[in-house]
Length: 116
Image 1 (cartoon, rainbow, N blue to C red):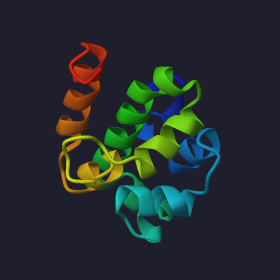
Image 2: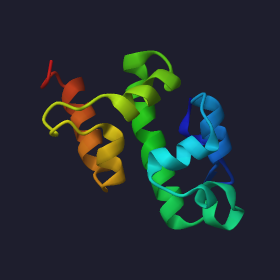
Image 3: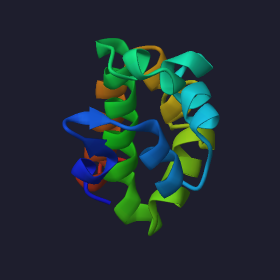
Image 4: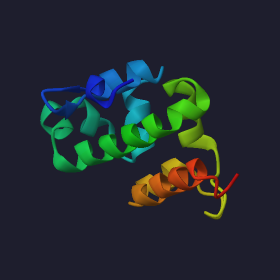
């Protein structure tokens, strides 16, 4: 799914993300390390911190989708598959700790054949 389809007026919408990834808005909040209010209350959804976390997750799921066939399966990978070289941490763990760039670099390295 194109990244713009997760948005409306430039704002990532948790309910659109949840529908695409076959999950709930509350689960999206837990995945990105936010409380329920952050994805339920309109003013909190629009906050820069909430938007950054949603954007990072969507970007990485979109990067991984071609490997897995669907965004829902890529999302399952994002949440549960430990990444080689990161001490058992998943993409979700790294992004929640502020290292989305490490996950993007990891996926780029795989594309380049570094971990093949």
